[in-house]
Image 1: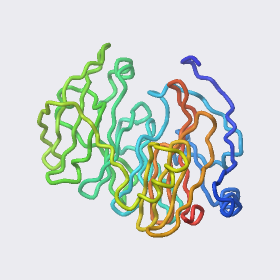
Image 2: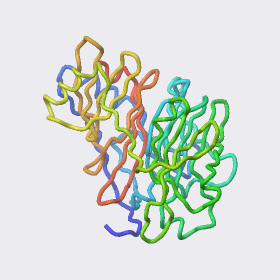
Image 3: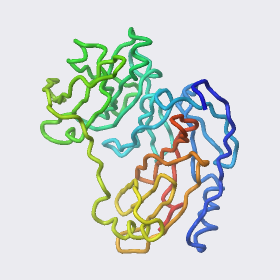
Length: 329
């Protein structure tokens, strides 16, 4: 595979394999009766996505190098329980699972975000933030484009606004290539950035901590290392169920009240209620190169992001919404 765009046909298999035969017909029926909503990212669409009938249809895909591809980088809940999805090349999408509506938030002012990569999502001061940067080669190719690091959205608006970072206003070429937003929920609320100056060797320039309330930055001595949180207490039975089938594996996890889900990148899912039975499913495989990347538990169901990736290239990528009743424990 080379760097020029290739159009390929991917057959996204629609067979849902289940470990428990008693659950197989009910869950398969739910998927085939369109109770599960599949989407693929589409920058030409007003909503940022286009619906798919499911993974039983061929999809025309243009493979792009990962640094230029449209793909999800984070999936988090807003303060009111909506789903916020960060998508490189698009920006921020909002999912309301009470209505099933997806809203694509365009910036209130320049720049257009098609040339920007997204990072992580965090909440502060009743706002939902997404971090932004540009790849080194993109900056060198089009240095005149504005450098932005933080965009935010508040409910009731349909546009993104930008939060200026002081150090970047003095050095417009620097890019925050790594971000740790775990401090945004503390007092004072802070975000750590690892900055790089776009040069041919792409050397690290500085690490700073931003105070969100005051806008002031202080230097830090070490590199940024976002904390990867394991499942909290209450997931032990689900972890054991997965381990019994697959051994030790990395998992994504989501929880909303009693609804709990562990998910592997390959689509193995364990779900169950506290103190009750657990179920083990194998969700649809997204082709040989497909994987699930994020999961979020909302009020009425799970949102999952997915992508196809091979040898540093990304093809189709999108979002799937699964009502809780489909994966009932």
